[in-house]
Image (cartoon, rainbow, N blue to C red; front, side, top):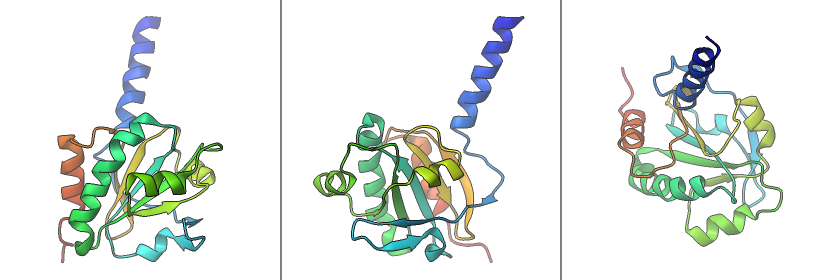
Length: 163
Protein backbone atom coordinates (compact mmCIF):
# COMPACT_ATOMS: atom_id res chain seq x y z
CA UNK A 1 0.00 0.00 0.00
CA UNK A 2 2.79 2.45 0.92
CA UNK A 3 4.62 2.10 -2.46
CA UNK A 4 1.34 2.82 -4.24
CA UNK A 5 0.84 5.97 -2.16
CA UNK A 6 4.39 7.13 -2.95
CA UNK A 7 3.83 6.49 -6.66
CA UNK A 8 0.53 8.40 -6.67
CA UNK A 9 2.12 11.33 -4.85
CA UNK A 10 4.97 11.39 -7.37
CA UNK A 11 2.59 11.26 -10.33
CA UNK A 12 0.46 14.08 -8.94
CA UNK A 13 3.50 16.27 -8.32
CA UNK A 14 4.89 15.61 -11.80
CA UNK A 15 1.64 16.41 -13.53
CA UNK A 16 1.23 19.59 -11.51
CA UNK A 17 4.67 20.74 -12.66
CA UNK A 18 3.54 20.67 -16.26
CA UNK A 19 -0.01 21.78 -15.75
CA UNK A 20 -1.00 23.37 -18.99
CA UNK A 21 -4.77 23.17 -18.96
CA UNK A 22 -5.36 25.43 -15.99
CA UNK A 23 -8.57 27.20 -15.22
CA UNK A 24 -7.49 30.79 -15.90
CA UNK A 25 -6.59 32.69 -12.73
CA UNK A 26 -5.58 36.32 -12.35
CA UNK A 27 -1.78 36.63 -12.49
CA UNK A 28 -0.40 38.21 -9.31
CA UNK A 29 1.13 41.60 -10.06
CA UNK A 30 4.77 42.26 -9.26
CA UNK A 31 7.25 45.09 -9.56
CA UNK A 32 10.89 44.39 -10.43
CA UNK A 33 13.96 46.24 -11.63
CA UNK A 34 15.32 45.55 -15.12
CA UNK A 35 18.84 45.61 -16.59
CA UNK A 36 18.66 49.41 -17.01
CA UNK A 37 17.71 49.83 -13.33
CA UNK A 38 14.16 50.81 -14.30
CA UNK A 39 11.21 49.55 -12.29
CA UNK A 40 8.32 47.89 -14.11
CA UNK A 41 5.26 45.87 -13.18
CA UNK A 42 3.41 43.02 -14.81
CA UNK A 43 0.35 45.29 -14.87
CA UNK A 44 2.25 47.55 -17.31
CA UNK A 45 1.53 44.89 -19.94
CA UNK A 46 -2.24 44.86 -19.47
CA UNK A 47 -3.98 43.79 -22.68
CA UNK A 48 -0.90 42.01 -24.03
CA UNK A 49 0.02 38.31 -24.00
CA UNK A 50 2.98 37.68 -21.69
CA UNK A 51 5.32 34.77 -21.08
CA UNK A 52 6.99 34.89 -17.67
CA UNK A 53 9.92 32.52 -17.14
CA UNK A 54 11.68 32.05 -13.82
CA UNK A 55 15.32 31.16 -14.45
CA UNK A 56 18.89 31.29 -13.12
CA UNK A 57 22.27 31.73 -14.81
CA UNK A 58 23.53 28.40 -13.39
CA UNK A 59 20.52 26.41 -14.67
CA UNK A 60 21.40 24.29 -17.75
CA UNK A 61 17.71 23.65 -18.49
CA UNK A 62 17.12 27.42 -18.58
CA UNK A 63 20.04 27.67 -20.99
CA UNK A 64 18.20 25.24 -23.26
CA UNK A 65 14.82 26.98 -23.06
CA UNK A 66 15.70 30.65 -23.29
CA UNK A 67 16.91 30.72 -26.93
CA UNK A 68 13.54 29.23 -27.88
CA UNK A 69 11.76 31.97 -25.98
CA UNK A 70 13.88 34.53 -27.85
CA UNK A 71 12.76 32.92 -31.13
CA UNK A 72 9.09 33.22 -30.13
CA UNK A 73 9.62 36.77 -28.88
CA UNK A 74 11.17 37.85 -32.19
CA UNK A 75 8.41 36.15 -34.17
CA UNK A 76 5.47 37.55 -32.17
CA UNK A 77 6.68 40.84 -30.66
CA UNK A 78 5.01 42.89 -33.40
CA UNK A 79 1.76 41.15 -32.41
CA UNK A 80 2.21 42.34 -28.82
CA UNK A 81 3.98 39.39 -27.16
CA UNK A 82 6.12 40.22 -24.16
CA UNK A 83 8.57 37.84 -22.53
CA UNK A 84 9.84 38.53 -19.02
CA UNK A 85 12.75 36.50 -17.64
CA UNK A 86 12.79 36.71 -13.84
CA UNK A 87 16.15 35.79 -12.34
CA UNK A 88 15.89 33.78 -9.11
CA UNK A 89 18.16 31.81 -6.75
CA UNK A 90 21.17 33.44 -8.38
CA UNK A 91 23.47 34.97 -5.75
CA UNK A 92 26.72 34.45 -7.67
CA UNK A 93 25.56 34.87 -11.28
CA UNK A 94 25.46 37.98 -13.46
CA UNK A 95 22.08 37.80 -15.20
CA UNK A 96 22.59 41.08 -17.08
CA UNK A 97 25.85 39.87 -18.65
CA UNK A 98 24.35 36.43 -19.27
CA UNK A 99 21.38 37.87 -21.18
CA UNK A 100 23.63 40.19 -23.18
CA UNK A 101 26.18 37.46 -24.04
CA UNK A 102 23.43 35.10 -25.20
CA UNK A 103 21.70 37.80 -27.27
CA UNK A 104 18.38 37.74 -25.44
CA UNK A 105 16.41 40.91 -26.08
CA UNK A 106 13.35 40.32 -23.92
CA UNK A 107 12.80 41.96 -20.52
CA UNK A 108 14.84 40.91 -17.52
CA UNK A 109 13.62 41.02 -13.93
CA UNK A 110 16.34 41.07 -11.31
CA UNK A 111 16.23 39.61 -7.79
CA UNK A 112 12.90 37.88 -8.33
CA UNK A 113 12.99 35.50 -5.36
CA UNK A 114 10.03 37.16 -3.62
CA UNK A 115 8.00 37.03 -6.85
CA UNK A 116 8.91 33.35 -7.24
CA UNK A 117 7.63 32.73 -3.73
CA UNK A 118 4.42 34.65 -4.46
CA UNK A 119 3.92 32.61 -7.64
CA UNK A 120 4.77 29.29 -5.88
CA UNK A 121 7.83 28.62 -8.06
CA UNK A 122 10.14 25.99 -6.60
CA UNK A 123 12.54 25.31 -9.46
CA UNK A 124 13.87 26.59 -12.75
CA UNK A 125 12.82 26.93 -15.44
CA UNK A 126 9.19 27.50 -14.64
CA UNK A 127 7.21 29.30 -17.33
CA UNK A 128 3.79 30.94 -17.14
CA UNK A 129 1.60 31.96 -20.07
CA UNK A 130 -0.60 34.99 -19.36
CA UNK A 131 -3.40 35.95 -21.72
CA UNK A 132 -4.50 39.45 -22.73
CA UNK A 133 -6.94 39.50 -19.80
CA UNK A 134 -4.05 39.11 -17.34
CA UNK A 135 -4.91 35.49 -16.52
CA UNK A 136 -2.47 32.61 -16.18
CA UNK A 137 -3.66 30.04 -18.69
CA UNK A 138 -0.72 27.63 -18.49
CA UNK A 139 2.30 26.77 -16.38
CA UNK A 140 5.06 24.44 -17.50
CA UNK A 141 8.54 23.20 -16.68
CA UNK A 142 9.38 22.45 -20.32
CA UNK A 143 13.04 23.09 -21.11
CA UNK A 144 13.16 21.83 -24.70
CA UNK A 145 12.84 24.88 -26.97
CA UNK A 146 11.70 22.63 -29.82
CA UNK A 147 8.90 21.02 -27.81
CA UNK A 148 5.63 20.70 -29.72
CA UNK A 149 3.81 21.46 -26.47
CA UNK A 150 5.73 24.72 -26.03
CA UNK A 151 4.84 25.73 -29.57
CA UNK A 152 1.19 24.88 -28.91
CA UNK A 153 1.14 26.96 -25.71
CA UNK A 154 2.65 29.99 -27.45
CA UNK A 155 0.27 29.64 -30.40
CA UNK A 156 -2.73 29.44 -28.06
CA UNK A 157 -1.49 32.49 -26.19
CA UNK A 158 -1.22 34.47 -29.42
CA UNK A 159 -4.74 33.71 -30.63
CA UNK A 160 -6.68 36.93 -31.31
CA UNK A 161 -8.81 38.14 -28.41
CA UNK A 162 -12.41 36.90 -28.38
CA UNK A 163 -15.07 39.54 -28.93
